[in-house]
Length: 194
Image (cartoon, rainbow, N blue to C red; front, side, top):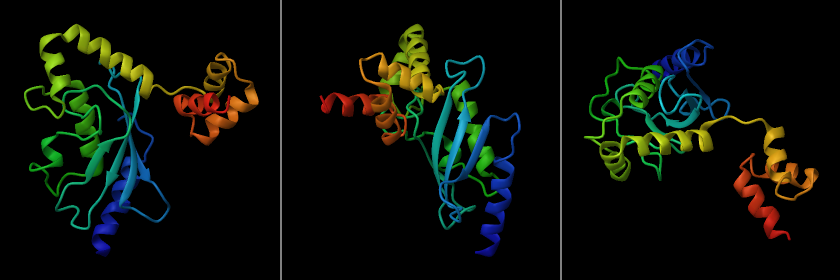
């Protein structure tokens, strides 16, 4: 068990480095190396460019002999990722996992999947159908989802957008902070208070 934890510590140091890979991961809570929050930058030249996608990573007791469980927390329009649940269809997260792979290589594989979707082996049949039958609409939808769900916005911009809906700044900021800067949830709360 100490060997597995030692490996995890080493892997986390590697995947938390500020390098140019565009993937990062850190423990959700201090001291728990088996539950991570990872981010993957949308690859340049793709419909996901400029987005920061959050991924929940759970590492089981059999790691590295079994793959980590990964799921997108950020909504994404992609044939191999469920638009509803964030479940991922990627062979190395299932039967093609090898103990030689790491958390970082798994995240880099997700980033590569964002560059090269595999609609023939979909997680989300509706998205795959659109990808194959109407690529222009797929690209437009994927860009819209990236813009809506994965683009970082400043907190001041969020406050300003909520204020533009007729709410005062103090109420807008308080509701946004309460809902972890989810504008829809904040506006729904503010509308409920009217």
